[in-house]
Length: 79
Image (tube, rainbow, N blue to C red; front, side):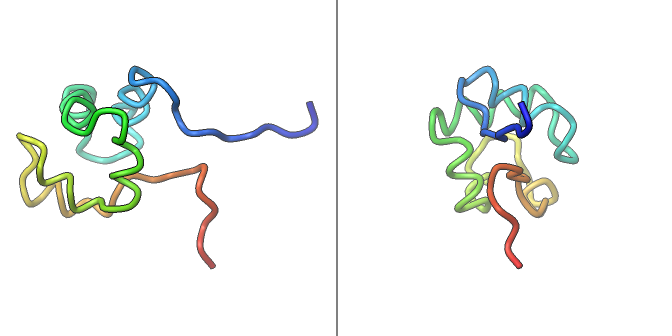
């Protein structure tokens, strides 16, 4: 194909792999699992819209919560 579509991870396991992939500093597989367990199917929507809610997840302190958020490559960059 001439083009490829970038889509967000669709399954829970894909979300956990995406979050724990090393793309986000200070977030590994264990913490990714905790985040997905806490927010469930809404994980990426919540992290995109209200990243400050990450503080609700057990084990996330102020330093980790200060991380600017989860990159969303499927969302167009604002100009």
